[in-house]
Image (cartoon, rainbow, N blue to C red; front, side):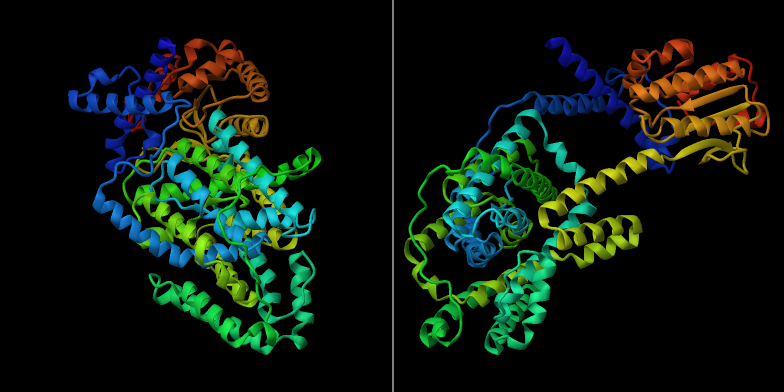
Length: 635
């Protein structure tokens, strides 16, 4: 184990030295990709202060990696002082005033009883505050995960029924189990396959899906379908029979909340709206005048019990839990990173994954539903001045008071008001600014976002997230398949510059220096070999030396290795001498394991481009004086 740790330390120190050597050139406007470094340089040969800093940095990384499965608690709370605790407590009260109406609204998306929204802001919030590391992330009900499980479970059981709630609890429990596995086996990287672009499109699609689902209750129109497009069509068909009073109240609620978010973010407009409409409903007896209300709400703290679900139902909801797992990892990690950077703090993602697992387990046994690190609620907490999980604990304390003493008045809350609150949440999920920025930077990425959004609306939320992940992977493979290939050629001043590879290009008479911008694997190996063959065959002068710049190649799989060995043998028969420069230790290991080094010759593999070119000179290539003086800047 000691030797393994030492080897890992050497790798980290080598990477740090490489970055250190390249940084001055980059700062002076030179391309880091055109530079080499002395592979014999070690931290001991650096200035003492710089060497100590590098050794300290690498030691910290080793310590973080060596922590393994050690469980840390209260990372999001400690250290804390009395003044900071009081500030966070006040922020928690402010958060509760703004957030309680939202968690009630999330139950409309989840299709669960209203009281379960309050349950999500109790034990799950406390669990993450104890086991998580982020001082800012608010873990509670979330519209995206609620839409994911509701879209699937509503076809398996009657929404809000006992069986439905058991399935909801099992989804939360399975999600907690998947998060534990992700913590143990370090599987958090799986969420990286859901790109930011796909995530933006997916959440936009969820916004449309949720907004359309709320239109029926807002207008007083009967909607029976569970499919988004069919719901929209039923709303259109029911427009002649809509309720003008419900429409008017819904418009007032939506306009008030959106105006508050735009002009007075600090003011709890949603809470004022809920309190005002409850009071008006009770006083005017709106339930007797055509307004549908929530009805009696069971108060008190949640009872603790495991979900009572059969084995077949457990297997049936496992894919739903996996979709929730991906969304939680992607959304929570991105949110916690943003606020850690903003406040110059470190965040332990492994501890956050464990905190999310415990939070979802708490949700499962307390009658709640899947919880997530919510970007909107985290932004609300940060805006209220929260700087630790103490604010979330204060939020949970307010929820306890509501559960014990204030659930009675909720029975008078009109359904159209609750639907209108959810509609404003859906409006916030449609990221118009983000889509506009994506369109300006990349039309291909914009197509991915729009297609992901359309898939959610047309097919379903669970299918939409699978489509988003699949499309992200396809785009990634496509980028690797069509990797950038360059040939170093002299510019007008005679200096070598990387130029997109094309038939007829040559670095110098008899010499081609070829750079490929991706790992070699089964999908791009043939394309790589064909490009090399075409460059050699169509070169303006017979090619005698071919130098591969392997800086961007870190891995070669079995299929690519077979293709590369065949190419090397073919070039050898044509009299082309092949050399490889900038070979890192990982690539060298692959080359030896796949017998590429044996086919090529160990003497033609080098750690720097400089050494490879020196070997080419020793092999007979003679650069002209101008070429020799204008070689790439290398060390």
